[in-house]
Image (tube, rainbow, N blue to C red; front, side, top):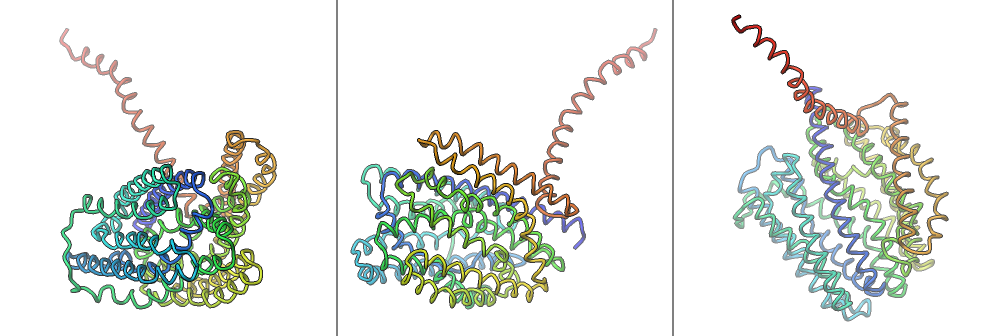
Length: 520
């Protein structure tokens, strides 16, 4: 691939990533606003009840997840029959997930001694069923690195879910408000997908072989990822009170927001960028890993150093106990940052068995450690077990990446050094300022103190990132892309102004020339 084309594709991938991250951040802001309202209208016990049900939903849905986007993105050309096959498989998957959730609702209610779980799971089963009906033709926009239609779907669904959930919470003060948000978002997104990209789907399995290679190993990896993600939510309700579990579940939900808002939306543009890299795939993988580390470090630093501030702002003082769980789960999540793009890389290369290998290694470590930790030490023991398992999965992923693209371990780990060097002084600013911020007697006063300090923290981090980048020799990456984008916009702004000024200066000269040409 020519150098100019390589640079253009990298720039398009970063631009597409900016779109997806911006959309997910906007969606998470809506989620955060909804969480802020619901946390003040409902208590930890209601959130703990829904967390029990959602653990089953996440495991069953992930167990039967079909990576349709990965299969369709890697195809040289899409045909209508491919889209119809993708729709058929997604529909079948949604029906299986919904029926299985109905089947496990009563046993789960009996296991947790919570009869309300039966009806709650029956309603929550509608969400994966709706996601199974989404229009597969939307992948055409992703293949073109145009994620604006996806932004419309996600933000519209989140907005409707916010309105429905807050309305139900105000009128009933019931956990059904959380369930309504879970169901409304995929319903609205699915309906809108057929308005944006019209398609009359039909049922067919004619192109089954295009998807079969991903499904076998994907089943194993999804089962492992689901258990890795939700095993603590399945075990802890039996070992703690519903209120303590609700506080833990809320802290974990807040700790997962950076991953959901930044990492998940980047998976498709990352896959497209890696698929088009050719022989430069190794350097592009490192470049993208470094860009993600630069984005994630300051966000996760806030959760690690200011959890009390975040919980008090988002949830209120009644949820203060969730801050400690937020801190330690954010620290555990940092251990997975060095090899976070291993999954998209393996999917791009059609080597999904390596995703399953990494996931199963992590699961084999997590299951006994989380169980023993939870039984012996409660919630802190479960978090410690999860941290060790995450580190084990990261080590496995580093070796898998070396095998897939022949990239040594040291360059993979070195993708973290620039953000970490920038985080040390910026994080010290947060740590020193925390007592002053938490001493605020009211929420408005706390915001007056926290917001300027938070912005100063981000500014210090950004300036230090640029300084370290310059000391490193100004290599290609996110920093250069952002600076080039800013320069290009300033150049376009000057170009728009300069023709007007040129015409203004030219008018007297034109008049003089016209006068000179007149006969005397």
